[in-house]
Length: 297
Ligand SMILES: [Zn+2]
Image 1 (cartoon, rainbow, N blue to C red):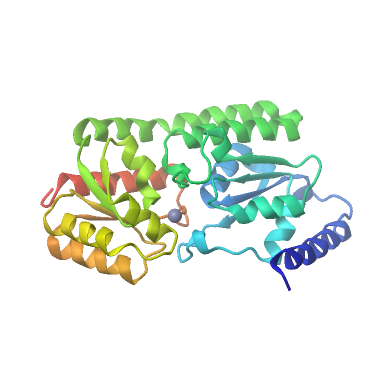
Image 2 (cartoon, protein in one colour):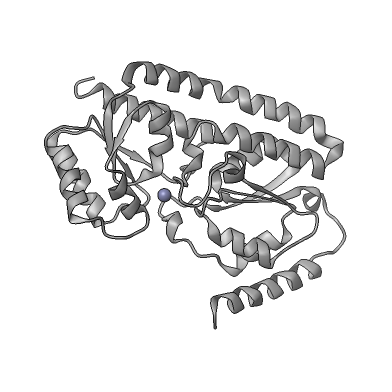
């Protein structure tokens, strides 16, 4: 069966389930159903929606490489039934573009983070590491929820204010680290932390190597040699790697960095279970500050 045909069959099944479930409303059914492609956007939706929303996040398992994700019929059903969908865009989660098309529903609100921050396919897709992205997504979530559920519009606006205020410690930390470490050369096995590194003023090396790893292709021998040289000769102050997508090549570089005494910072694509977006970012910034401060700090 072709991929498209398979998706259409799922959609037909999803719609059948949706209609069969249109029984009398229970309290739980009155909640606004939200699907977030990634769990950090889902966390923001939960923080802004409060008790008024029921959020399903698709990507969030720490053992999963989001770049290799494939949708399942259960996810198609959720998307078909959602009142609000929030996803990253910029080709990070193109499966969502396809599923939104085949489950087209009038009245469903869709928020695409990439559109809000004017990013597109080909840009570094890990947009949530750019400190300007989450405030924009949060504002869009509050506006969408206020449109879907006008009776509680003020509640969403109030929670948006709380959410934006809760990002202040993050911004302060970024500013403090930038003042201290701006211009410091670093490297990474993948561009996942790239936008945050830029916000910190760090000079990121080995960009084409990172794109190859992100796309699950083999980096060139030249890029690999350059990376190795950066570690061996301490041309970088720290190395970031993605703990969620660390194949053998990445593990080899982690081992090499450790052997060469280059501090290693593990970062993740999605929010670790049990942490809010804010707590997750602060934790990674703390780890980064520790690495940049150097050994013995
Ligand atoms: Zn990634």
